[in-house]
Length: 263
Ligand SMILES: Nc1ncnc2c1ncn2[C@@H]1O[C@H](COP(=O)(O)OP(=O)(O)OP(=O)(O)O)[C@@H](O)[C@H]1O
Ligand SMILES: [Mg+2]
Image 1 (cartoon, rainbow, N blue to C red):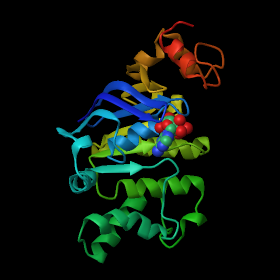
Image 2 (cartoon, rainbow, N blue to C red; image 1 turned 135 degrees about the vertical axis):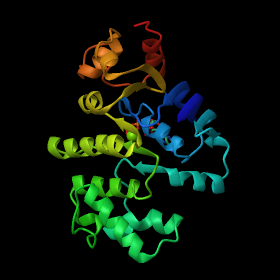
Image 3 (cartoon, rainbow, N blue to C red; image 1 turned 30 degrees about the vertical axis):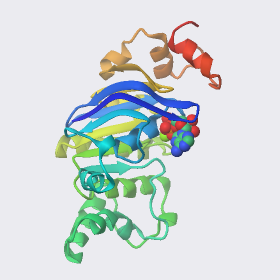
Image 4 (cartoon, rainbow, N blue to C red; image 1 turned 180 degrees about the vertical axis):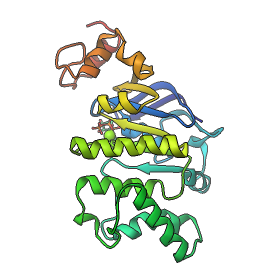
């Protein structure tokens, strides 16, 4: 469904993707794990056409989206839903209008139909009677759920989630994880989830990709990742401060040495 081929991206001297290849299967949940600053959000945004990579291809439904013009990308985006890191709700719009936004942008549906869709989508994420509230009046968990309702309001084939559970308590996070899995199993939504949360990824993913400063250092089923004998993967999934991945990463050569396994 989505293929990333030879993707390279830099922001000045920071390389966020170093000629990576990966693919995302239809109707599956793929989790992209990686430390802070490893390029996860950048990759996710480029997969929805927000910003072009320096070079390489991103094939979505047979089309290389890096070559699409604004108009064609806008059309294709109807098939995609995105839950942004931080939810990215419009602060000046109430919850109803936030969730309705993609429908008003992309469709000519009547107010009545929009009304029904909003009710259904808010219900799906477990929210009721919040339509009139403003984003500032919501808790963190509710904000994520509204972001999720907006991401699925157009019935997308693919939903991209950027840190859907960060900052939430374990129960609220569990609710979101379950929602992601339910949407995938019940509606067949292809799901791409960027996360720090190793345990959740091991639970909900069909496939896990571990990104480390622009390189894919591991890829496989949760089972394969759990049983990996790669010291970097073991350290990452155990969250251990000791191992080949140092706590603070500032020196580019040092990172490259680790990737070359010189250290
Ligand atoms: N638009 C931009 N312009 C310049 N640098 C950027 C831009 N977007 C991201 N970066 C840099 O690219 C690197 C990767 O950022 P990115 O947001 O993709 O990381 P991340 O893996 O999502 O991190 P986190 O887990 O903290 O969200 C960072 O060093 C960041 O400062
Ligand atoms: Mg990020």
